[in-house]
Length: 274
Length: 312
Image 1 (cartoon, rainbow over the protein chains, first blue to last red):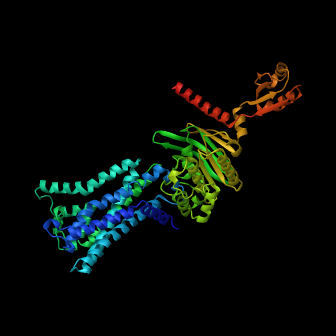
Image 2 (tube, each protein chain N blue to C red):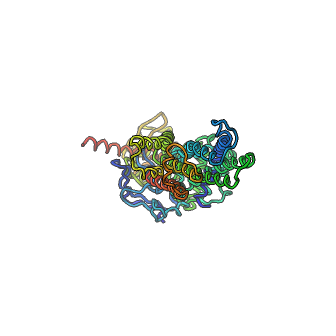
Image 3 (cartoon, rainbow over the protein chains, first blue to last red):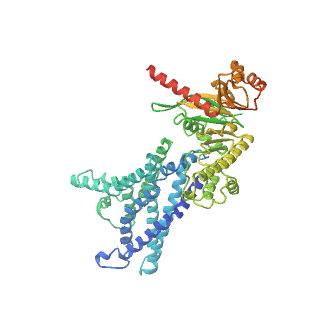
């Protein structure tokens, strides 16, 4: 078997063994079902409301959760093996650093792919069974796109975790840096953009501004799950309404957000002292 | 055939020179002992051979190829390595871990189970490695190192944590591999017991090769005295006078014994004299041990260093 697949298989098995897959799947499923039934509870309605409402609320919650889960899943990928002494050993085996990294990425991506597909997929199926008057094609399409983009978002943060893992020499430091990067991407970035927008009273190059959202994978993810509907979203995301990004542009941006960090992680790993 | 050929290799990390001008080669079917204090450059040498580092200057070749190049990957199938401190994957069982390594080296999983048997882990192979003792982890490490019947085996402190019987078994295995033409590098702090199993010893100190050769060559180089104990009801003073020309020192250590220190070149003439002396019942000959040789070369190095520092 190709070494890349052997490594991916081990990561996936580890995911099953330490209950990560089960835990993430359950969280996703409960979250999705909960939101589709109680998402509109604030306005006094209980029960499934509409596909756009469900997906948009789901996206705004998943955007916090998925990066955090991915960072937790992968922060020790390199530094952990180094601490256990297995990194040194593996690199004397017939495999390159690139193969090791891609193998791990494949393994972690499968863990996230399986969990999001089963977790959110189960929610979609439950909705289609119990909710009345639902456009099934629209439902599955929306959830399909949601699952694909959620997995890509997760893999992007797995790659970011590898960069961190390759840079530090202690697991605990990697955990700390992972938390900081989560905070930056999920909270600080949007707040900073909003701050600039308010401080300049909206005069800051208005045409450029929506494109700045592409610099944050979490915003790209939210935009992807907006454009399918005629919704405008909430908060910062509304400024993208003028540009009308196509779904393909956004998906491409998210794929870029996987490829660039993995490239950087590879560079960091190559330079890492053993 | 030369398995390893290192020519004038140096390794610098920033301002620190970890290894200076090392020239060393190992043939197939040879066991080389690599000795030195902490920070002497043992690990750096190992990493150069394993291709985990590329030398700042000089050349390293393994199996006739550059170990730190990408294309070396295919030659790694014939290379076994036992790292000094490896805790493996604590949450996996010994068997799962060996299967993982076997898959990476494209070895039949049956062979890996057989190896678990050979290193004496078959009864513990379904337990998680976090429950293993140091010795058991060491045996698992050995098993993964010899998965492919390697042509080159690097062992870093292989007998740490092994009980005497397991140590013996381990050296038996090294002897067997050597007979099959495997080149072995044995890095160790534990000196007693290693002597019989190594062809040559390389002693590193302060990043430089202090001595290289078979044990008897090193003994000659160091001109370390051997110790001869003579026992028996004899006139000890007369004996001492008789052998005076051949010895460095001769002292009575108790009523019935004399301890003599001498050099290799005088050994036979001395023994003849002793044998002709009336009342001698037994003779014990102790050549300088690896430990003495090691101490000699390492302390020479330390003296040289302090001398140089004094000159500054």
